Image (cartoon, rainbow, N blue to C red; front, side, top):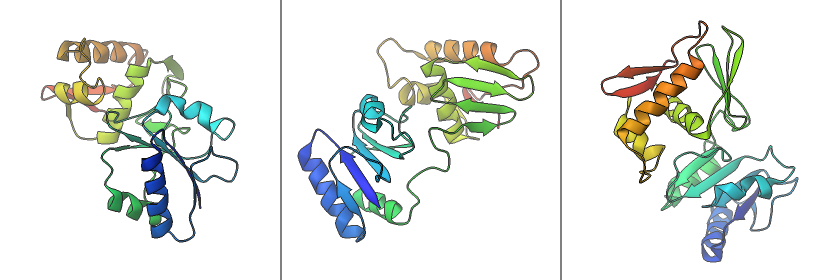
Amino acid sequence: MKINIISKNSVFSEDLRQQIEFAIKDADVSTDLPDDRTTLLLVDEDDKSIPNILGQNTEIPVVLFSLKKEISDFADIVIKKPLKLNSFLKALKEETLLPKVRRKECLMFKEYSLYPVKKEIFSSQTQNTTKLTEKEVDIIKYLYQNAPQIASKEELLEKVWEYSTDATTHTVETHIYRLRQKVEKDGSSQLIITENNGYRLNV
């Protein structure tokens, strides 16, 4: 197992390197840029830098450590800081850390296939491909990750908009209304269901 840690905080990256090597004896952990031997990339905070860090090695799984973000277009999983080290090391050792669905793959539900990186959703029922905005992708991804539970408007405001100063529950309502108008057309199934003052994905 070759793991690369990218962080502007050298104390954090060095401590994490030592902890991983202590917990997983056969792990080769580096704070250098990934190469074709890398099997896992750990990135601290800056997810926008991930495409440049990966370069041509786009198939490398990516874990993002973040204080604010819940989801990322570029990472396979986001782990909130402060890091629960024991839980992280256990999941890493037992190979349960990464989700079943990679960021390069699609999220499939009903007749829909969502391609997060391409920002497209395809309906096998109508054969239509619809381009989405980044925020629309984030909404679907969050509802997908929490399906079949209902997400309140306030929850979406917190997790997807991260309490942006110009965002209100009306902002959430407007985005979901427009998203449904774009996707639920020409005979496509209902994408998002409104229920109990919140929303759930129609899975």
